[in-house]
Length: 328
Image 1 (cartoon, rainbow, N blue to C red):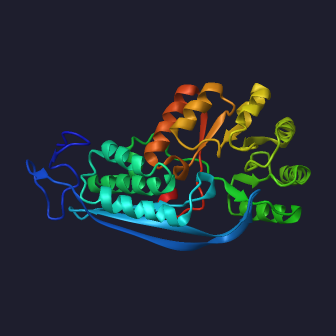
Image 2: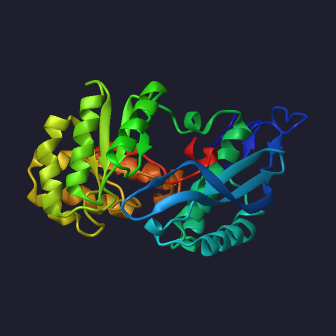
Image 3: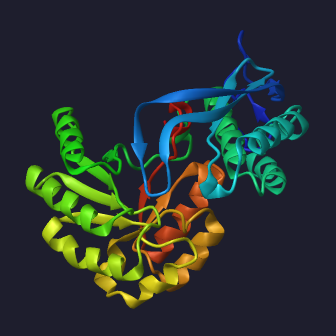
């Protein structure tokens, strides 16, 4: 029986290959670490308000313990978190070798606190290490990470993104995705408001009423454009309007009606729990988009979700351009 999720166990943590019978003390130490980089092509390049995206450079980490179990993590550094690929990999490699290797991962919160101090400027590196530790512990006890965390939601609707495209290409992609069974479309906006509105009206006409449309301006709008889109949202049946203004300008949203504010979703304005505390005070957004690469992994995401629950904020879970390791 396990005495503690974070302490010495007797016959608990997964049982080493060959067995560790009742009454035997199981020692768990991370004995192996590996980091590497890979560039992955996107299935389809896309355009957002700030750039064109064709490929993605990702960093990976693999942790192994003395019982033969392993855990995987992925880092996707971006300009959103003020990271660059080289510095992220350096932080990931240094922390994996100098802090994680040789550690007992079961006192997880203590180990995470040490890592967060070293990765304060490298949230995606922190995310990779954080998820790898959770993955390692979950594999060691033979359950998925979600079950280890006390899963209460069995399924979430998944959207697929349409980048900033000319009208006919937008509609063509939408038809393709609807044909593949997607029920929620996320549409990138933010370069030209009038063209955005034209695209959305055409999309709404194309899509059945039960198809959700959510939009993301990626900080590309003025407050007046955000106000106008909120006014149009009822006719367009928009689910939400993500990050219309730049990070640091969210206070302007307080001038909108409460109904309009509830439509607004924070992305770039919300990195970690510290941002969540600030946004919970004034509540310029009715929805928060949690991304592991912004908040430093599962631990940071749990902190944000706890604050959201207390503040009555709805949540959505997003991602950067990542691999299945971190998205799953």
